[in-house]
Length: 241
Image (cartoon, rainbow, N blue to C red; front, side, top):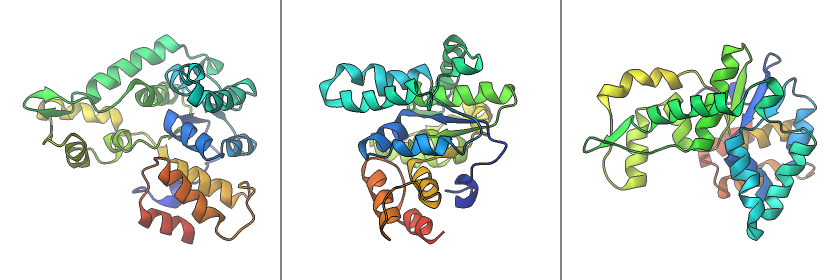
């Protein structure tokens, strides 16, 4: 939360689009919190968007797997109710997003290297969210990206930290590619929010539907244990706000 908790957790009146990556949708679904999106949408002056790539990860593919079918149906319900919408609702085609996704993904997956070879660090779904954000900015629509994946957020917030983070994940040393450093500017102007901040906002707006003093704490623990990259210190900070 390097840009300040209050700034990240505040829905600006100027904001027009909140773009969801797969992670927060799956996390909220697994914890039974998807209903807060429907309630938050009522006070949000703009669109809740998912790309086709995110739809594939959260609906199209899991709908064919018995273990994940219920979660997929929950996402489908939000789409049918137009709580979540596709970019075409703003006149943006999937081909336009796919093209920008390919460009950003190619840059991201060549920023780090080991023995002169690029390291793949991002996937289509998460980068498609950044691609959509870039396209919307060109249309003067303000955006915020809901994403739990730390790697993608570090591309924008602290690229240098990627070396240590990816080295730990891969168990071999990686370094930022000097020849590609100039392209980091492509990731310099994105704004992010995670599942825990969405939970915090819902709590402050009395939308959690859990009347207990430990409701916020328990909810933050729940999203952490389902994969959101939030530290214990950050949880303690949120509890005090």
